[in-house]
Amino acid sequence: MSSHKIPLLALLTILVVAVMIQITNALDADPSGVRLITNGSSTTFNGSVYSPATALAEAGNITQLTIDAVGPTRSWTGFYGEISGEIVLEDANGNRMYNWSDTSITGELYASRASSINWSNASCFVDGGSVNYTGENSFYDMNYFDADNINSTFTQTDHDEFFIADRSVTGCPTIYTHVSDEAQNEEFVEVLLHDETTANAAIYVALIENKDNGNNTAVVGFDGSTHDFQMIVPENGTASNSVTTTYYFWISVA
Amino acid sequence: MVKNNFKLMLVLVLALVYSLSVILLETYADPAGASITDNATVSGASSPTSRADAGGTITTMIINATQQNPAWKAYVGNISGSLKLSDSSGFSIYEWSLNVSVVTGEVYATRASSPEWSNITCANRTTVISTEQTNLSMASGDNDNINFTFSENIHDALEVAGTLIGPNNCSSIATYVNGTAQTYNSTSRPDFQELLLEDNTNLIYVSILEIDAYSYNNNISLNRTNDFQMIVGDDASSAYHTTYYFFAELDAT
Image 1 (spheres, helix red, strand yellow):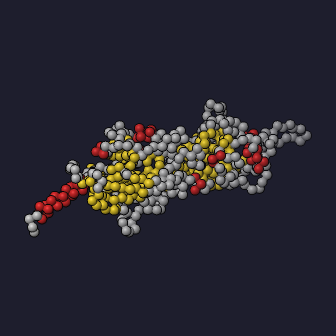
Image 2 (cartoon, rainbow over the protein chains, first blue to last red; image 1 turned 90 degrees about the horizontal axis):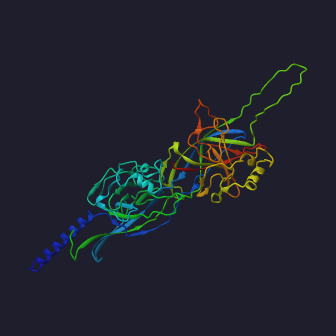
Image 3 (cartoon, one colour; image 1 turned 180 degrees about the vertical axis):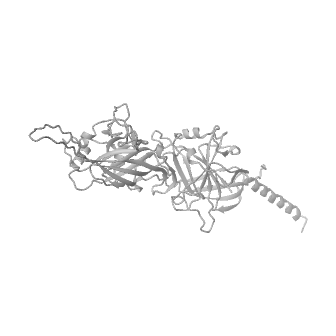
């Protein structure tokens, strides 16, 4: 080996090490803002799906009935869909050295009405602080006794561990959205956090379902089709309110 | 974090491509078809009164008669249910079971299988109600026809498929509690309010749900309650039973 190659080899080694350091640091990074959302169709509850029951009774009679009814919630909206992207190695000017296409993104999708979150303070939603169930419910015009208010919805705490930067998150209020129109407790986990500093609001977290590239292991969602994520967030759908809540989205890739 | 001019940053670029479906139920969903799980029918029994008089007498009697009305029938009972966040195909992403002790809303009964909920308004006495009376073989002078029966305008406000119906605007009644007519006025809310709506074509009976209110057949010792009670018209001249379709609109509280 010539003497000129030794310094070059040393420089290359340093650069490789620097890249590795950067990759490691990035894996401990806070969630980043989602760059692009392509909106698809929006549909809503369709009462005609539920055919009315009939009752025959003779005139002059009083008939006892037990009625089972279903109605739409006025306090929640749902999001679902697919996530694809690429992991890149580029400098601060956006000059790209390399990229890796990845259609099997895993990690977490975060949604909050707050436009800015102090991720170092993001933690399990615990009632009693500055961000509490009473205040959050009130913001969306939900009442204490509502069967579908926030605290009556997020009643479990058994979600899988995930990380915000390098901080482990476990034991937070949890729900599982439906698979094939049925309740279940395995897929499509959603967790409730809050940030009582910068955001001063709740944060809804959907754990992204793994979808292995090139095979058929995608997770079936609420409608019988596969999806990468599903989540529900509160919304004031009462007749007296005409303003919709803007939600901001972040993502953290594992 | 290492900072320099040639800092290599790992930037995550994500393109989210979704079918973003705001599966929510807006405020303006139509009442949904209700399912009925059981029923039992009670018809009025009548025991005859008797007397014995000596031969040769002429007895004047004032007879008070009670007879089951063949032009009406009633549905009473309880309601259970759930709230869903569903798409237009009926797939739900989440569901909330309702505590039956706090379910509010309305039960609707109509002879129409598919009412046009976007046209809901108070029923007009001279058009829809009059036409319905004719359809049920009720004469305009009958004192138990629909107009004579629903002679009041005392009821709560309600919302039907996004349309607000103001208080005391529609023809209404309040069915009995404890076997007795209720005493009320426009400022004292009675239980088991029932009012008449229309969709420009069809008459719709609406029972505003109560939360376990004492029922028509309750007494002090029985403690019977119902979530709803309603009377609907029937064709007394027909051998066939009139079919009614039931819908419900629920609130979380």
